[in-house]
Image (cartoon, rainbow, N blue to C red):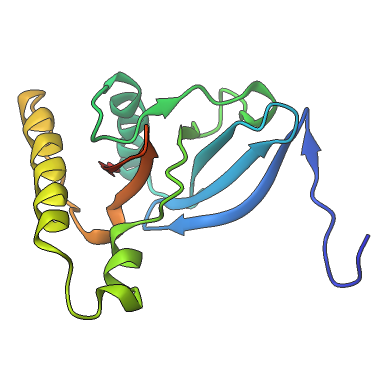
Length: 164
């Protein structure tokens, strides 16, 4: 072990890489399977929530598992070695969007004079498609902000996805 670096624990190949976000309900951590090279973002709920917020968390996990749209972050099955017992609050495994979030893009030096019109139109189009899809399923997202718009690269195209 290198001086000053903690050795990462492996659970059947799954290793916790780093925290990639946090919010009111909990934290999102990047995990990578060192055997398969698969990466997932695992959202873990804070344990000190009141009963109403625990209910809302369970609903969020259930909703995410049912949604399928190219502009929404897709839920994945929690790998068995990382899962929690049935009496604990469920975890939410999601695709890892390696491009970071829109806030990171907006704060980058290249964006100091604003984004190109083509980029703004693409972001607006992707977000509008996600909102339309959600509204069609009678779901309202009440926390639309740059930190909740994440970027992934699919087939050499940039796709903005929206996290619930």
